[in-house]
Length: 289
Image 1 (tube, helix red, strand yellow):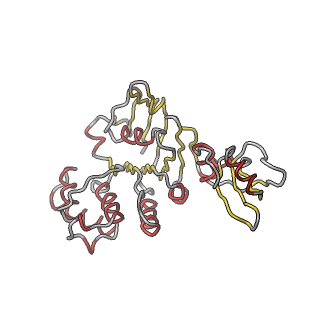
Image 2 (cartoon, rainbow, N blue to C red):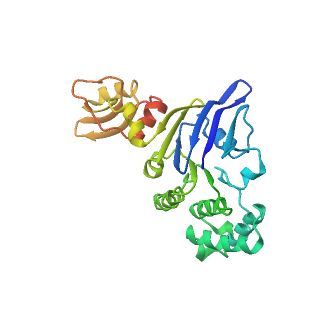
Image 3 (cartoon, rainbow, N blue to C red):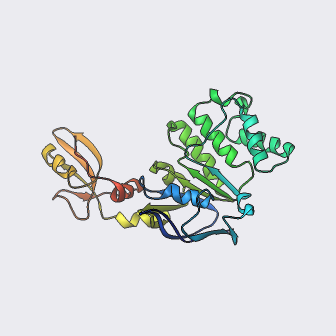
């Protein structure tokens, strides 16, 4: 089971959204990380066959993304997923099953099974318009699984969820990665840090990191610093370095920041995290307040 992206490129007039990206995906959870405009959504939409690449190809076990057979093994939850508010959850699931070509009875059986998996059994006969954001997101992942896909693509699935819902959602996604390829895109670094077996970092349409958390963190291990400085110095540093954390300590300010070199005499190296890596590549220097 392998999804292969070969020199994939997508160009919009003068902008290259995805730039000659090559990647091989096998079963597991892949966390796709990057700032707005990095090319994440364009990449995911090409993988789902929604967008045609300008050049390059995508194949799953030699099946091209353009073939009908490919759609049979694909599950997709886009960032802005549309629901029919007057449908009940079970009606919606059966409808999505019919769109995927499932026989009526099989679609109903699968709908019941998946609604239980995402803890929506008790509200299966309630209209979707009465659902909270978290409940809609769980219904979204359930519909993406109705055809038991081998490839599951989730674009910003935890956006807008409260911490409890996000943890519940993460646990569901983590289990799904044992026997299928799951590609998860999000701005929420902790979601990727907790469930991704492989982390993919995109910038300017290119893949700049691909590996386990421990592997990619080594890129900034000696660039994360912690120090205690005056308020005046903290304001000065904020104009120069990406600031990760700020804490008032009596008359001084504790700073955790990213810098290529030691920023001041009393600075010491801190243990790098995925959030540090994200800020190193994507943070704009902002004024300290």
